[in-house]
Image 1 (tube, rainbow, N blue to C red):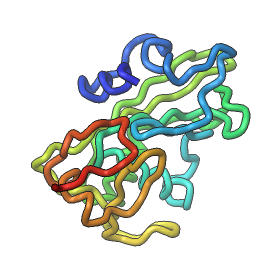
Image 2: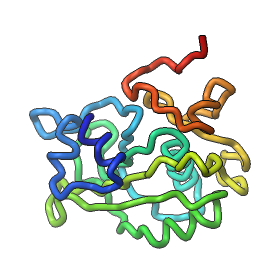
Image 3: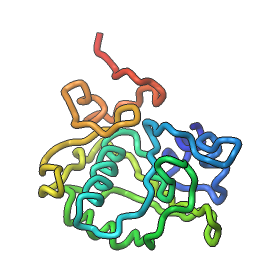
Image 4: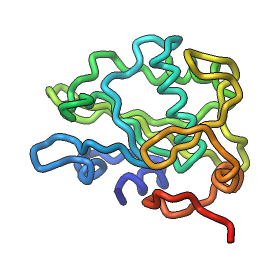
Length: 187
């Protein structure tokens, strides 16, 4: 996980997939079953930038940006956990344009394809964590099942609606332990 944290901190994706995703890859070449605080798997890049699937991706991007940043790894089969399942051509410019119309702030994103031309190619989207001077990103308008104005954060392997206990994370960009499954407390 250290390589993922480093990529997020440096704001760049390494040339080799193994150096970034080695901890998420098992000996048989499949990916781990569990998603985590700073990574998530998706089978495909969004085909449409106005449907419920795109809304869920946008919500995940908000949660990573409002928390510690993270990686969205496109092309990973939900059950088999193998790569190479993204059948949609990635277009970061179109995604950023759609996000700018949907979200209160434009999240910083980097996209890189690993294994281009192979049967196991994946696309990795690096979502930067917001700077402490930026308010949390949220939807300006409702899309799919997600309402406007909701602040999303990443907790463990889930995207959840922000609660009062997330104030330090949202407004101070608190850097508590990434591996902790418990939320920080004020004593």
